Every structure is written in C-alpha cells, then in structure tokens.
Length: 131
Image (cartoon, rainbow, N blue to C red; front, side, top):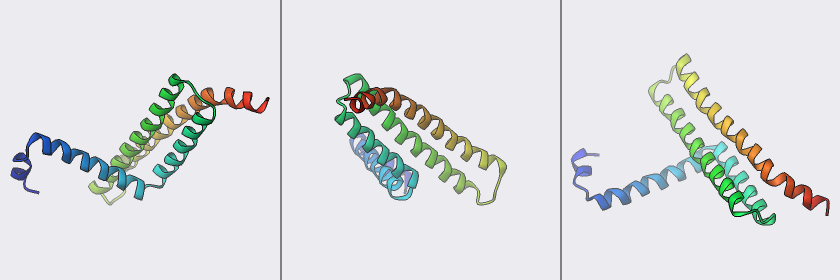
C-alpha cells in the first residue's frame, strides 16, 4: 500500500480502519490457532460457572480481566511466532528461544488464571456439592 494514501486519510477514517484490522486479527487467530480456541472454550465455561454460582461483581471483574488477558497474551504469542517464522525459515537457537519464552509467558499466565479461578469457584462448588 502506498504510504501517501495512508497519510491522506482523515483521522476518523484511520481510527475506524484500525478497528477493521483488529477485528481481522481476531478472526485470524480464532480461525488458525488451536490454542486460542481452547482458551475460548474455557472462557465460556468460566462465564457459565460465573452465572451458575452468581459470583460477585468483584469476582466478575477478576474473571473478565483474566479471560481477556489470556486472549491478548495468546495473540501476542502468536504474533511473536509468526514474526520469527517470517524472519527465518532456518532453525536458529535464538528464534527457538524467543518462541519458547513467548509460549512460557502464556503458560505462566494460564497457571495464574487457573489458580485465581480455583480461589473464586472452589468454595462455591464445595458449597453446592454439600447441599
């Protein structure tokens, strides 16, 4: 695309266009990334559990932030992987490390999300089972 064309767009059109690109990114990651679909399924489960157990507003805030944080981090991981793959098709130890570290960040966040989810939902589940 010609850079002059981009510069001639109004600020409003540039702003709206940025949403178009972002929505396209969401579509791409959902269509092509299996791990994102797994996170999506677990987010549905977490939200359903939130409704079933009538969690508080503060608990909803935590759940929503964890869900969307996980989505964002998984998308950043995917972006890093795609960028590394674009730069080199050959195996390079640093490229492998970059991809592994990005995946490790996702795993770290997911672990924290699971722990937070257990803190929120286990007492409610336990109270439901002992009724």
